[in-house]
Length: 319
Image 1 (spheres, helix red, strand yellow):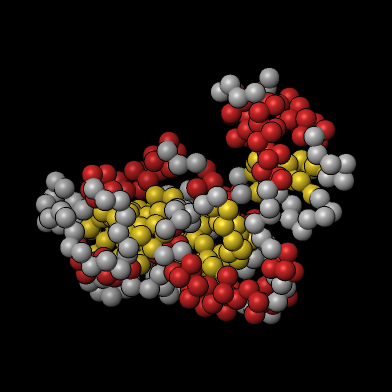
Image 2: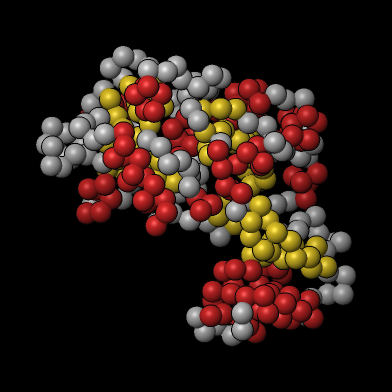
């Protein structure tokens, strides 16, 4: 059975097994980097929530041998569980003061999200974009969030810069940073809090074994946003060298290595190769490396602009 037939049959099977007042709608959901995924939107007049069921992962399970009936039972069980966001919280979303402490930011590609960025408030960071979301709760170790749209920000009377000021306080508290060296990650205890001042286990002067550090957050979701947290990059530079290369591994993490003989072009090729072969399209952050220039106090900059002797991006927020 091909994907289209599977979606048709699965939608009908699920519809036949839900209450008459429940409605199922097939829609294309726009994800990060303009990736569109086919999904079922489930609405129930007795519930404030509208669960979203992505069909592509279910089709992969079906191709690998899981019967459609079993998949349907799994989805029905999930739909019957309690909606993780309390209705009073949903009703309060129009009141900014009621949700101020839930506002967080995310870091995404500006180039790959031009259409999406027309619909949301955002501020620039390097050649990237900082967008905003509300953290509404957790379910099965996953965060439940809601993207802040232009209409919502206008209702609150909040500008993008004002939203950033609030989210800058909340995000490190709600999504604490984790900074791990690759050697420890592969062979030792996984994960050190970013505030940990422990000396690196490798010799930073060894050209054959340069230290590689991975920055993400405790949830592992949109962990590249930790680049905007105060002092994290500077503290790492104080430990392993004043100037660092920043490799945007994905929207979920970034890598740091000491500035060395690696050229800008070779780093670009490496990032592009990894993005094309290892990173899902919706998780790509950038094809370009960045620098932390601590020796001259400029902080995080665009390596491309640095090579060309150009000023940094106008309006870039200061992490």
